[in-house]
Length: 199
Length: 199
Image (cartoon, rainbow over all chains, first blue to last red; front, side):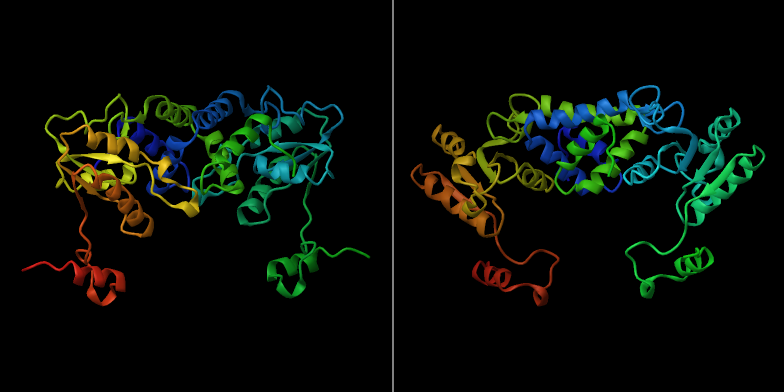
């Protein structure tokens, strides 16, 4: 197939590097941008640039931040003695949306998954241990995902924190609110039975 | 759900405006760009900017061009007396890839489809008629898509060109090379019978 001009080919190639965007989709997106109003297309270009230049990990908790410290770590009304450890900024947002937690966070930036080539050293675990060792932390809540790699990561962190004497907890396991026992799988049901609470 | 910072939300919003990219995909792409190497993300940003600033329609045929006139219109070895009329730059590239056609093109930038709100005035038909009226054109090949809107567009153009006296042809219809009669639909088979050629 004949080629488009170099500028267009470069755009198609760059779009094709995005996850889930194949060669055909990249071409379609490139043509959309070609047809779009210049202002709209440049707004996307500028938005990408702004994110790369302005957004950094928070120096304390590794949440996404536009200054040295994220808005949660910089908030004096939050309880800095309780750290909730999450895998990703997305998890942090999901927990924040409940409005239930008033402590601060620590974002691991992934989980331990040796088969995916993700080792403990790639995560921000050392920084978490340093935060705890620096004192003033009373509780660390491990809020990793309730799956094999999340549980493994939580286990690894809890063993590291055991020596510091800090209280280490994890999120509750059980039936998902709004769900049905009939359609729950064995793992969910065993958690629900094992972790039953007095009424 | 809690929100990301303004810069990130703006990127997600801009990505979500792309065709086929929903809110979830936009968020995923934004996080990919956040994690990506700064150089890689800025390469995408720059590629979008370059396309909008450098690529314009060719002044003669409305193909995509990075100078006033596209590479085909500017090529003296092409036969400028034969104009092949296509709907989109993509169609032009597909025809070019055969290497069979040595004339020049005219890109309509769409087809007539009143139900989609695409009228003849939105296309570059006037410019095509002007090119033909300017003389030196011997043949116009209508290479619109072999479907209702493509055929309608071709019919409209041929009626406009009838007064100029130029020879107007269209692409052949028949069995697709490599296809099977057994699986061909009625439209294809009727074309194949009607347009049969002497062996």
